[in-house]
Every structure is written in structure tokens, then in C-alpha cells.
Length: 611
Image 1: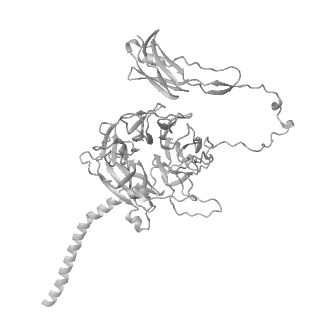
Image 2: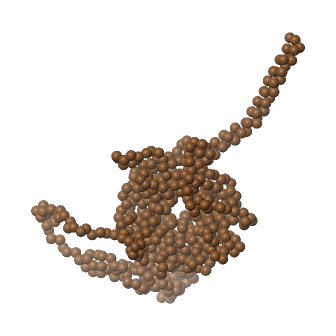
Image 3: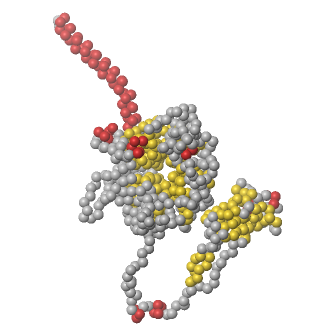
């Protein structure tokens, strides 16, 4: 081989060696990136998961192309594979109603009980309530139309609407618009909302005790905007206003005690929420609440316009974990830093991880003039106030695939770890989960028949006036000769009388901390009440005489273990006529309103034997 040929061969060999080295280096450098990509593919991500619209009626043209469900007022989950949402509908394809999630997809559950901005309260795994719109039918009064938005209730159980609750408008006891709903148990649910109309004082509340629904207005003058159950306590978020009547230093949260006791104030830990220098409490909007198994979160926006004389506020986020309140934002160490300046918090969702929560955001410009093409903005915030993640939906990949904006983020909930749902202002649903979870059902598919068939009937209620027929009904009683013999036998005539209902019912007593007697009871009307504890003939403890409104009430009495009572008496005096109820047969059933010897004293004696 010539020297020239050797040189010509050497060049390609050198080039080949260089290429091999470059390729090896490239492989070494790209190997970590491949691992990062694999890791990214296992991380949870948000993706549009819109259900198909329901099938149209026979003979009506329809489309299987997903569309927005209309404004969604609330999304609540009992379990990751059992969820509900309530919508105002998107006619004609989507009627107002309720949709259900079974772990695989969403489907229409009810074409009744929809709402303009409704709420959902789970009372049990197969039972729930909705704050719904009223039905038209009432007449205008002096040119004013009866309000229908979010001022009625539907009680769902056993796969149907068990009862509907409403009232006629323009009356002192008319239902007000409701913004919050929550349940301790199937027999203990609360619903609350706007202030009562003047001259009444307080906020509108309804309480379900398992048998009936009754008004239980609170004396504090603050409208209620949220109710959340956390660690066995029902927290109530209120909106403070400069003109509200109530306590001198109002609390932004109340605690609704179980078993129908009137709501009491819950004073947050000192400095929570922390108001800036010169910032009034009413410069902050109500706390939007969200609870998981590990934490209760609250988020509030600054009021616009700022109350006169107050410094402008900032977005505020607080957290309660195991009874301890902390504030994430504004950061006490850097109060001037506002990561959400120019944005509005529309919702908050607590994760099962107590250190993090998701926020649904909107720009102030879009909040003032909503656009159907606005992007959905999300942020993940930690308990120390750090924003660890921001999202704008649709994602880049979805936009490249032809998915356009679906409106601002409006509602949020996280039923499980790495499992969250977001609804946009136009009723489109996004789901946060992992690719692995998307490839299979989350948990087990829900096959409960109560959540599988379509509910189309809502029972009548008092919100629709009863119209008397203007014609004589058809006589279909049959001929006399066709009647059964038993029907021809004269029956004794029953006389209907009305008797007063008992003033005092549902008495329950228990000891608190060994020596504090708690007595719970229900009053039929407003009454003057005093509880006495007697040891033989001597009175050893008593409460002052107090005047209590009708409803579920309680008294507390401190007992002396050294002078333990042998009898408890509740002295009552009705301050209004007792309602009457119809009965048949002779006799009356009048109830006195003097002294009532209370039951269950033996259990108290067992706890502290008489000496």
C-alpha cells in the first residue's frame, strides 16, 4: 500500500473514531434526560375529561360531541369513585340538574333540582342535599318577581328526591338565598346564606334534625358563604360588613355545634388571619373553605373597592392542622410580597397532603368581564406560602391537538391523593391524576343503583301556590249497589279537635368534665326558662331566668359534687300561644308550662353518687 493510500485511509478512520466518541458522549449525556422523561410520565397532570351529553329525546337531533355543562355551582365527593356536581345547565342539550361520577366517567343523574349557583351536602354514602333554584309559578308582588335563585332544597335518598323544601316569597319567614350547606350526619344538616330582611336581625339558617326542617337564624349579623366539616366540627365562614350588627370584635369563622344547638363563635388563634397595618377586618372577603382528612384550608380575596378608611388588603390563605391555625399568605416575614397580585382566587382545594392545596385563579380583568375563551389558571401553594406550581389550561399538548380555552377555573376539589377535579366557568371538567390511574379505574367502579338511573321527578313543595280547580270533579265513586258491603255499614262519626302541642320536647342531658350539666331540649314557642338542681327540698344550683326563642336550645349548669342533686327541674313559661295540631276522638291533650322533672338523672347519679 502506498504512503498516499495510507493517508487517504487514515482520514476516514480518524473521522470514524471521532464519530464514535461523539456518539458515546451523546448517549452518556442523554441518559439522565431519558430517566427524567420517564419520571415525568409518572407524575400527575391535568387533562380535559368532559363527559358526552345525554342522549336527546326520540325524534330530536343531537350530537355526541362534548359540550360545556353550564355553570357548575359545586363539586363534592363522598369517595374517589362517588362524586356529584350541580349545574345551571346548558339548554337545550344540558338541562339544569345533578351529574354523578362513578370512578370511570360522569353521567347525568337528575334533570331536576339544578341551580344558578347551587351547593351539595353529603349526608351519607347514599344520601345528599342540594341547594337548588325554585320553580316558577308565584305571582309578582307590586311589580317585583319572586326570587328563585338558590333558595330551595332537595333531599336525595334511595335513588329519588325524597322531599323538596321551599317557601312563598315576600313573607317574613321566606327562605333567603343560600350559599352554604353541610352535614354532621343524616339527621343533622345545616343550610345558610343571606342576612334576614329588615327589621329581622341575623343570618338565615335552616336545620334538618332527621324529621323536619326548621329555621334557626343566628343573632350575629353576618351573611354565611361556606360550611365545611373538619375533625368532627362544622366550620361556618361569614362575610364581615361595616354595617353588620353583632359583636364588637367579629370572628370570620363560626362553629356550628351538632345536634341543633345554635352556632357559636370560633375565635381564631391570635394573629390569624393577620391583618396588615391599617387594614380593617371587613377589607377581606369571606374565607373559601376546603377540608381534607389532614387539614382545613381557607382562602380570601381583598375586597374591592377597599372599605373607606382601610388600607388595601392582600390575598390571604390560612390553614388549620390538628387545631393549630397558621397563615401562609400574606407572609408575616415579607408582607409586601403578593404572589397573586392582579389575580382573584375563585376556589381552594385541600390535598390529602396537609402541606399543600390547589387554587383556582382568574385575572381581575376576566373576573369583571368573564370571557368564554379565558384560560384556566391553577396554582399549588404550600403551607409556608410558596407557590410550588402554576398551570394554564388547556396545556400546550392539548392546544397543539386542537383543544381551545374553556373558560376560567371556577371550582376545585381533591377527593384523594393525586386526584383532583376542576370545573371551568363554562362547565368543562379537568382531571388531575397520574397516567397509571388514567389507564384504569380509580378504586372500584361505583355500581350503586341509586346513582345509576336518571331522576326526573321533584315532589311538590310550598314554593308553588296551590290552585283550586275551577270545575267540578268527575263523580267516579261508582253506583251504590257496587259498593262493598262493609262500605254500606254506618261508621261511627269521628270528631276532629285541635289540641296544643307540647312546649317542651326532646330532652337530653349529659355531664361535661364531670360536673357541668348540659341540658338540650326543643321549645315549640318563645319561652322563659330556668333550670334548677335540687337535693331533696333544697335548691343546690340554678341558672338565671333566660328568654329563649323557639327551636333547639341548651342550658349549662355547674354542679357541686359535695351537694349532688337528687332531682332536676326545668321551669318554663310560654311567651306565645302554643301551636295546635288536629286529632280525632274525645278529650284534649293540653300541656302545662310550669315544672318538668327531667329524665336520665340516674345516669348522673352513677357518675357522682349522692352523698
